[in-house]
Image (cartoon, rainbow, N blue to C red; front, top):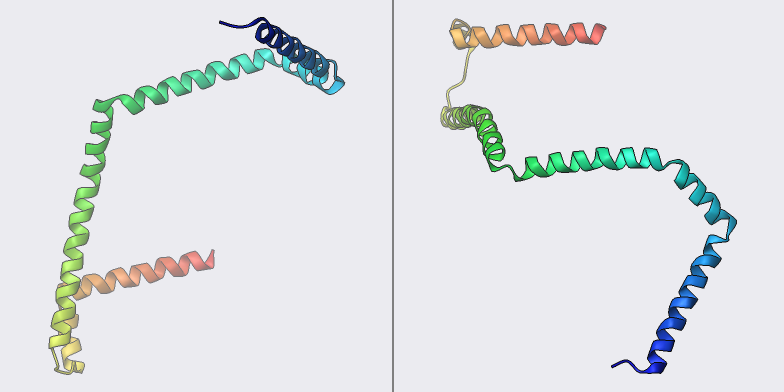
Length: 141
């Protein structure tokens, strides 16, 4: 049970706090801030409504497991082919590096001329030529 002195102390504390609040409300800067706040209440209410709708939408998206799974599968379908192609290119580069290191023969002029007839070499040279042309055009702009 509360004793009388404790009840009085609680009442005194409450009265002191209400006086502190009143003292603060009497300050001109607090009154000016309250005036600005009251004038902008319609805008604040509109902003709160928009933010609440955005929060509700984000919450529904974040908790929709079907949407999350669909999004995950969509990303996997995009990344998987790219990843497989990158792995294939990396494997070919490693194999080519191993072969080049194992080969000790010198590549002579006739060897280069023979390589120039290879369709892959021709394709690569056409790409290099087109790429350099595009880069030159971009530098002139």
